[in-house]
Length: 313
Image 1 (cartoon, rainbow, N blue to C red):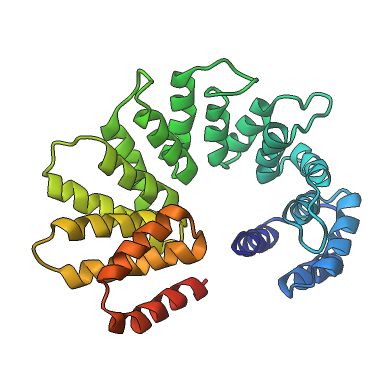
Image 2 (cartoon, rainbow, N blue to C red):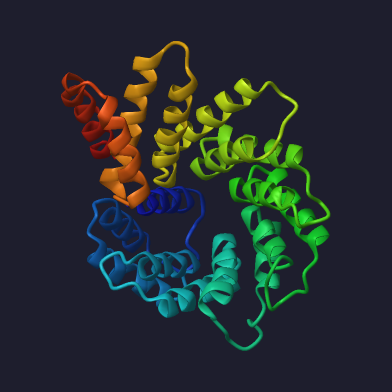
């Protein structure tokens, strides 16, 4: 739902700044109003009519309807068909989408069998994330032989232009001990840039980096940083971070000389959240140990906080 709202906001920004080449003003306003009001089925009919008349932005929008399942069953083939039409009319985000269609959905048309062209077109048009999409083709794909330097080059260009996914990919490359470019300090640099911009995945990976590698910093400081970033990831609702945050608080509790109540309560809050979301054996086992130490009178207040967190989407 969040992704859908984000795309709708993007569309209204585009529609407000780019003129339709072949569309009736009333139809355009009508389609926008229907979409804004959540009348997706009627909006799709409007956009498809405009798209069939050759309107490039309507073609892109029709692709989003089929990709995201707005009022229709998701259909990646139809989505890719509309994205392709819009991409040929130089809609930058559609160019990236065509690249994605080729890579992830085996989309293929004559002269559209390689994603490299479309990703580069999108990147040069200002969709900088597409630069790292291109770079990832050098990591493990049928389109390019493995070439880490090319991956670093393209993802570096995208990361320098503030692409979160590119910054995370650079962190992953530099974190890989099997590669000659292994450099945990560079991995930390890129993960932290993305984490500070509220990427829950980057915060999670940064925490794991602090937990796994040996650093010159004081051990207690490193442990605190690992916990800090894991909890940031959890607060941003990255579900794998719930259990890990509880685990890190529980580990600190075992060696703490002060602050026991705070650490125990935090262990319970995140452990309970993890169990409610995934209920895997590891989470249940940790919660069993926590509950053996938790005063019964604490539970109502802590459970209410967990419920409030999970319901506040």
